Length: 147
Image: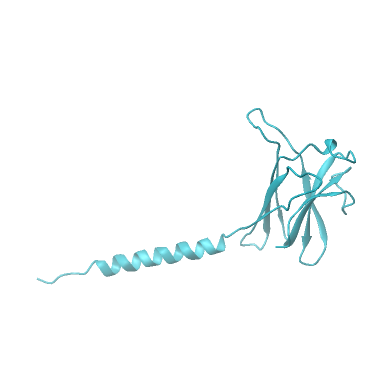
């Protein structure tokens, strides 16, 4: 009677599955950077997560905690604007961020999710009077290091 060795096909299948998982996890890696401590808003903490997709676009997710309402900070501005500096050294307005409190929330929270075809090298937040401005003129509240 001849024995068939099932261990080799099973082992090869498991190795193949492990390789596929490793390759797909490398493609889906995201870069996560914290915001630096701020002298303007010392209690504010947050992170920026950047992930590229298969079309070479960048998904940017900003999450901030303990962010005071914009009109409560010195200078009495009306809104926070999130900016990115691109690889080409240009500055782009990527959106307005509003702080909010929820009934069940004990901390002020703010978030923004957007996509860009430009690769970001730095993200920062300013206080502005108008969310649609094209260049930052207000005070920088939070900033990351370069990616």
